[in-house]
Amino acid sequence: MAELDSHQVRFRIVGTADLQGKVLASVFAQKLAALVRAMEAADKAANGQQRFDFVIVDLKPTSASATLREFRISSKAPDYSSVEIFEQCVRSVDTQHYQFAREHLECVKQLVAVAKDVAKTYDHAEITVDNFETVVIDETFLSNATEAITIPDPEVAEAKWFKGVTVGSFDGKILETDIRHSTPEFIVRLTAGGKEITCDCPGFSIDDIRTVLGRRVRLTGRAHYDGTGGLPSKIEVIEKPRLIKENPDFARWRGTFETFTIDDWHGDN
Image (cartoon, rainbow, N blue to C red; front, side, top):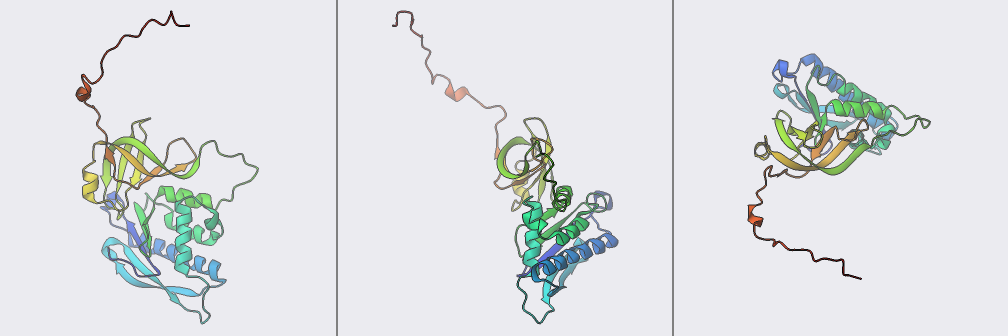
């Protein structure tokens, strides 16, 4: 896709498999309206009142994609860019670092509206701001956004399992891939436990993924834990997967080590 100019937001929806990836016009209109409301809420929270409106600078109906740019409507100079605040809200939800999101609850509530019915009325959506890394709007994002607007009760005990994002390495087999996303995805089945996990692969080409499809690999990435168990719910791969030999050949070590006999230690003092 074409690169974005400063203070632009690209919003793209991918349809469900039963619609061959097509998106219903009513769904696209509904989700785009929620996205605009989220950007307006970010503007009001940062600048005290609405200082910007938004214009469509690119619309691609064949891919259900719209690119928006903020447009200043106030004579008073704004303190902040609405797009920059919106982008920070999206990142806050995506990374599960909720402090910023909870300072901009009205924006996040509209992000919940954007993500609502994901995997039902549409497969997933994508938000790209100023050419930063694309954020995928999927069931994980919806769960995060819903949690972000739910202020935790300090009386409730801490969760048993870790919840958040951390970098780690994982061993597993690549089962299948989905290249409908601008950020490719694949499914990995972990060697330990057999859990199948969706992996986002920003910056990877189709050829990068094809070379590891069906193979056992070691992955390094940002692992998203949802607090319901000891394994991540999603992994953002940050390095090219390394192939693991499933049946290593030890023949090259033959003759390297000599046999030896341990002396009797009974006479030692």
